[in-house]
Amino acid sequence: MKAHTAPRIFKAQLVCAAASLLLLTTPGVFASPTLTEALQQGSTIKVNFRTRYENVSWDGYEDSDALTLRSRLSYQSGAWNGFATTIEMDNVTEVDHEVDYAIWANDPINAGAVKHALISDPQGTDLNQAIISYTTFNNVVKYGRQRIVLDNARFIGNVGWRQNEQTYDGLSFTNKSIRYTNIFLAHINNVNRIFGDGIEVQGDYHQDSNLINVSYTGFEAGKLIGYAYLINNANDAFLVGTGAATNKSAALSSNTYGARWASTANPTFMYTLEYAKQSSAYDNPLDYSASYMFAEASTTLGLFVPAFGYEVLGSDNGTKGFATPFATLHAFNGWADRFLTTPKEGIRDMYASLTVAVMGAQLVAAYHDYKADEKSLAAGATFGKIIDYGAEWNLSASKKFGAVAYTAKYAMFKNGDWTQKIGTKALVSDTTKFWIQADWNF
Image: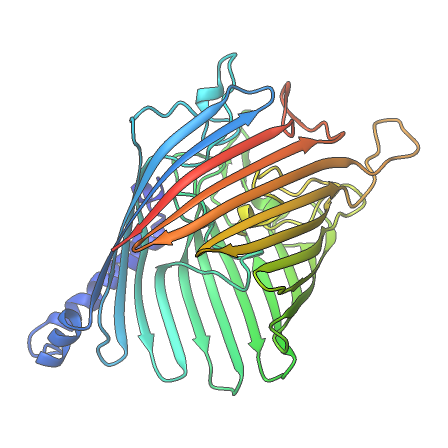
């Protein structure tokens, strides 16, 4: 897990945090009853347990199942002259202590003839958050390891569905000095991904990235958001099979600029429109440019909320698709997670969903139809075709009883004529997934 081998920069952050704590508790400097009261009376401790059973049936692979428990302990200090600290620890345990499912595509468990389906919930203990914050009337500054979720998490999120959460090391700043305006800025030096440092390619990504997100709510009709996500994957070079050094994630480096409009005027009819443009940047070996488009509308009809949407992650002439490597991907393009990486031909996702509230329970049904954005041209062919990636059904039911929230989910993906592979195994064959989850908060 990522806490086992913390990046060098985060070690410096921990030193700074320790130094700050020492300064605040040194007699004759800041020690006072006010500080003591803030740390004791103003602090909160939260405990969360999330138990989940997941079953995956993936054609061409051995079925996998996992019964995992995530235990989370969170501490939030009270404020003293605007300063506060947050510490959060996670532990993920496979209940029977036998991990017989693959964590990622090239997991050593899949080194033999039998290939196991993926369930991306590795065991381990993780320092999820460690923040020194400073808050004034209109400003919040956070330094350290922190959770960042921007807008609907389509570009920057915490991957909250997985047991091991994605968090960010760096400095963030939120300002609300201008009326109706929220300005968020962040410099990120590491992304602590869900796989942990133990997996070389899929582990943490060292960064030299900047995030800018500005929202304005002064319009009566809705909320306008503009953003720039300048992602520079600055991983240290490592040796590949040929003995040559390479940056393992430079192909993820990009600049993305976009705007989002979300209606707020009529709660019975809501719609969202979004457009973004992405291009390769920094040390990315690929030279590409691709667009993102999103439109969704929903209405409320008594207990029923139908919604219709169309999302396009574009492609640059079938060579590279629009990338969202730090998104909460499970929330988009179907719960079967067949599109965690955008295909090089891009993707067009047309979907419809129906949400129903019944006796305190929320029931959701959704259908997705997937097609490529650009034609795929086979070697030596003159004319290409638009790939029919397939279709997917999603069903869920959730209800809260006291401090416990229960959830059951089901996803069924039916492949079209997509033939992408990992070695000799089809990457996008028919897939079904099923979850039962209990989330306990104390």
